[in-house]
Image (cartoon, helix red, strand yellow):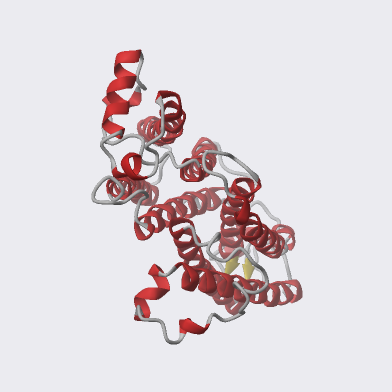
Length: 376
């Protein structure tokens, strides 16, 4: 895949951003699984960059944590050493978010001064910065939900919002990179398959919301069995539950049931999508991409099952098989999302206008040298 001299650094910059966002999501998972998210009780964007540097500062931070409901109701036996461990992961998670901001902001200003951006590129990049800032704000709103009342964890709905917004940021950044990296001759005109891909992505985002709700409600350990859910494939009270529709986001078993059901549906749809994609006349890029969603979907489902089965071995303060499975389950989710994003980008509803009339009857450009349009 070739890019012009002016756009290559921009493409590299965006891919670095994609990698850093992926690392940030991984750090978020570690922070959640180690119970570290509520260890820092304030949101100091500037002064919070450095961790406590001496014993006096550590004791001051520990004293703030001791005022939280999580300490009083759950971690009341924590010593300073235990606190330092959970503090590190939350601090590192926040530090990495700050580094992402720096990595996006400084090259943006440099590239702007060098006039590497076309007019059409500037607005989407500004949107990217807004999404990043919004993600930070939602992160703090999430943390604040676990610092009052009798809460010992953050609210599951806010955890879901924080996680899904991170994936939206990942998707948006990756899409912007694809616009600079994928030449027109690699695109495929297939309107129905394009629509099918978009529908699967929309359903996947719903599934990711439920994955975050699973994490927030600790719903894996509420039903650590498979293929049944505590002895039933469809829990009886789903149809007579006292919570009504709100139970589908508030009740751990109902959340668990929806998450499993959506997983099976997604696998079935992706199998059907792969069959259709295999029949489609393909460019070299799409010939590779069309297999990736199925591979990641099957891997994701397998890891989901293992996460549920190993949840029975959860041990407070220890990183065991469950934590490994849960973390890998989360990581594969954004690889699945990115594979579908690439497929959605390569597939087109109609031919892309080629320079000099070089579009072929199939809607694909020829292998002749056609300038890439570096616009968003």
